[in-house]
Length: 229
Length: 229
DNA sequence: TTATAAAATTAAGTAAGCTTAAAATATGAC
DNA sequence: GTCATATTTTAAGCTTACTTAATTTTATAA
Image (tube, rainbow over all chains, first blue to last red; front, side, top):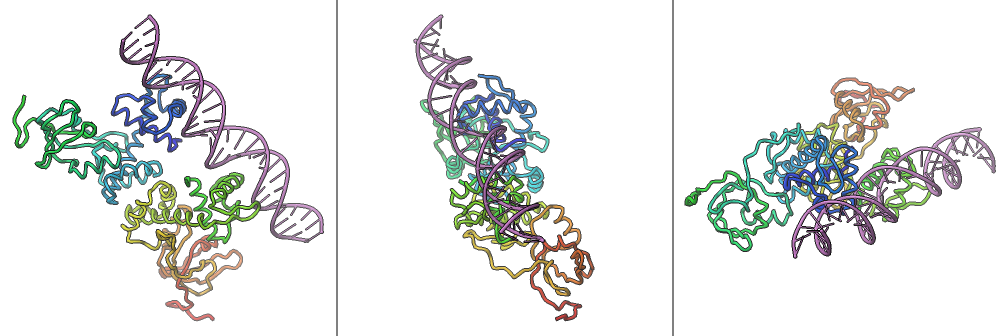
């Protein structure tokens, strides 16, 4: 019914929808690493299967059936990630790529088994919420990009965008890991490089990096902070 | 390089080779549930990739490269089976089908991780040997089919052919499980139905069933047996 | 508002992996 | 050795999912 390829389209669409609010074909092509015409082609087919609403030259949207299916793909992906990380002890930076393949070839029964074994986790190892078997996302704390945080505010690192192994390894090496507190000290104007403190250390963070880190529990008073507004 | 479909051909070829000593195209078609011409087609392509030696109207053979690749497929399959059974506690009769899919979509690194986690097992949950990372099979006890066992001999149930869930569930329900001792009492002549004792109980076993159960440690003296030759 | 750039589509073609129907080759019983 | 049957191959055709090149549509900015 839904091939591996279709599942990849649905998953990528879901992520783009969440990040950008809409899904342009070009972005899909980029995300999936295929040509534009291939995307047009497939979206027409997905339209016929009632998974998306496709009209030429417009951003594409899920039907409710499509969104449901996408949720299941995301669910399988994130449960695999969590399982690989917690049970297999597979390296944090590698679970995403591995799950990318496994998500297509496991039965629902296995997914549900692993979910139960993990005691119905709400978050994957990157801080992404795991949809329930009914496609419902757990309630989440409000989050903002580190890039958008106000000066001298602090918060808890709560999610990082799924990304290259290089990026994730860099974060680990710098001690920028989920659950830690981080305070924004300074923002350089010309290139948006940030100065932060984490573990009582000052660090420089590129704007690209800051675009992919998400913070919750923001406050303007830190342990050693002063109120600024 | 080797698609999921190719891996399925290699895996099926390996199993047939082991059971029948040679691989006829028809049997392959049956095992893979596809048409004859599709098999001819694929085997020609596998020939071009130097994975098999194909000549028209003859049984097909592995090249050494092909056998190597087949071993890796079998290895991945059996490590997944063992992992699902031991770690996930997935039902015994279901691990084969699940592994059938997962074997195609896991990295070597993950397979090796799981293997280490399982402490380098030699056998999968059905008693099949697991090839090492170098493609070497562990040394095994000599085995014969239950169907071929001599009257009044007994032995240890050591392997069952991978088969339908129905078959495996039947075995479990009857208490015919790996590691148990079993003694052959009687063989009905006209249909080869066997009478056996297991756990001190007498049971009737169809010849088809007996063809798919393998025994080791055969002896002609049982706990309550009398010598017959 | 019009030129230009960006985004999307159409057109033509490819490879993998299937199918069924018909033809060719092997096998095995007599 | 020959004939019937089983096995395998050829032939023709299909679907999925991609490609590049050329064209069309939409968006942007002077």
